Length: 235
Image 1 (cartoon, rainbow, N blue to C red):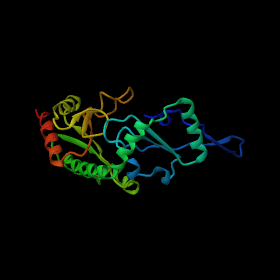
Image 2 (image 1 turned 120 degrees about the vertical axis):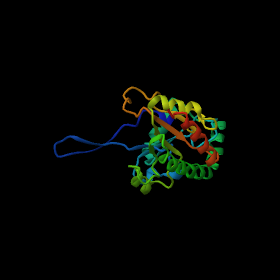
Image 3 (image 1 turned 90 degrees about the vertical axis):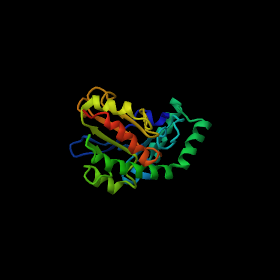
């Protein structure tokens, strides 16, 4: 990711002292909007101070760019971020800027198609006998559905689900896909088990957890691929 999004956060803004003489400090609210994209959610309009995007993913959409974006609501905060970038470097070159712009030009149609497909896949996975749970904010039963519906213009192209059989079953599904790629970065139709990739302290993740990034491939082709991969977990 580009330099600005990965720098240390700016110093907190100090406010007048309270009645006890202690300085009051207001924390900055930063939102990673990578998966929602600017078309799906506008965090600054919702009260955030800072928004970051990994432009490597949905913004570029072509798996050939490494970049990041940081957007500030306050001009003074933006100035401090620019100053950090000037000192630390990581300024995108002409080629990187061109690749990002090329991807942004097609973001609207890509996001619409991918989100529609993701929603249908989520509904089908809920009913699949080899799936224990599906996490997708577009599902009415999802705990985040009400908040997502109030804030998001689209529910996005990322979902996750738990496979019956735990980590071995999740590995088998990801190893058995043919059309979907078994890979990490969500830029195309990709799938991966999440527990082995998690850092220490994330042992609480469900052992059968799989993350699915939905791209532009045919809905029915993706569903057939998931179906045959899930069939490998039958005992």
